Length: 87
Image (cartoon, rainbow, N blue to C red; front, side):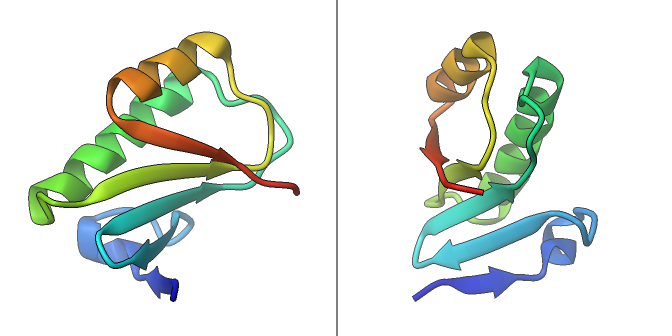
């Protein structure tokens, strides 16, 4: 069962949406514009902060829009799973 996590406990803005299910943390990005490398660096930073507090955490990025191929490769290399959802 998914539980919404208060993003403030990790020091993130209230606009960041995070759900958790056991040791899986899901960062939600719902937008129509493409996710680019700048966004990828921000997502990686969030993932590192979560893993500092919870070392066993698995991070997933749930997106509704397109993602740049370089950013996709970058996130996969850093063990962040990508899940495409319909908007």
